Length: 83
Image (cartoon, rainbow, N blue to C red; front, side, top):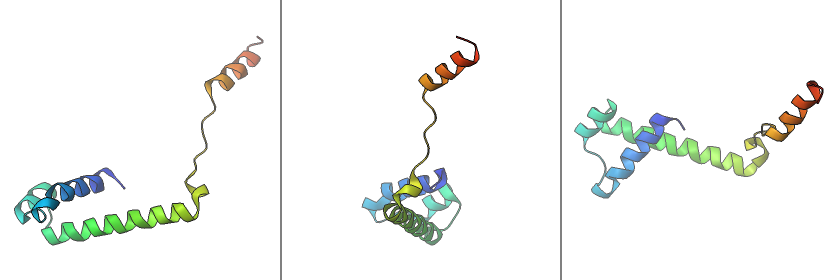
């Protein structure tokens, strides 16, 4: 989910207690119609739900390798400098 998607969801959340955003606010904020914004929000939520479901089924795909700790780097540098 990118920054624009997060802005859309935050906007929709802020207007939810009032029955959703008015068309003029949507057009001014995002340059699209209210229906287009609602469709985009549904797409964002469906995509995010599918991503989370995939991660739950295959959690190892979401694991990133960690960078080496600074202690390892210092030891390596000490060896190359003859210390």
